[in-house]
Length: 289
Image (cartoon, helix red, strand yellow):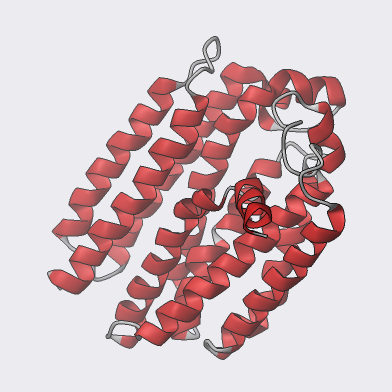
């Protein structure tokens, strides 16, 4: 049983939760301070954590199920749990159902708007995995899906989605879409041969990396806009300077003729960035506010 759980956690890349979870907590804290003028309760934080775990686990499980046939053909992904026979399809379906159940349970314990918007979130969680079959905008759809985490955190404690919340949503969406473009570069040849769609396939590696840079410039603009739209102060601004340096370094790591450092740019740099942005926002609102 423990071996199966370990295989399952590796299949869904549980450690990648680090990308979205800090932003979900940031959405909850920032939204609560801006709208409610106080910090969220520990109970709300706990339910948001459970909702995040449920949503991400369900999304990744579905992605592995839907893409199993494609993964089996790709040398980079043929060792994943389903193509390699380490997990049965029925087992992954069961994990997916349980994960969606956890998401629904947690959402029901939060503000009513969170539950009313849940069908939209579920639609995106399912829809994303099919998009690379018909559109090179699949990275943008992924961004809009992952960014539901910070928006969900905001809505979960405020029952509100104002302009600040939407700026935060699109900021994280462009950040996610940008780094997903970088990650997709390593499958350029395979995707092209299989007739799959992506920005690297549509615009070439050089063009894709420039588009990723453009998306991350929009991310930088969005984080600065939040500074002016909310009660954030110099502490948050200092964190943004560090975050921008990380983004710059991330793009220096990857070149059209050298993709050897894609995983470093994708996981290490983006994991650090999300934690940095959250920590400095937390210090700003909780410690120095």
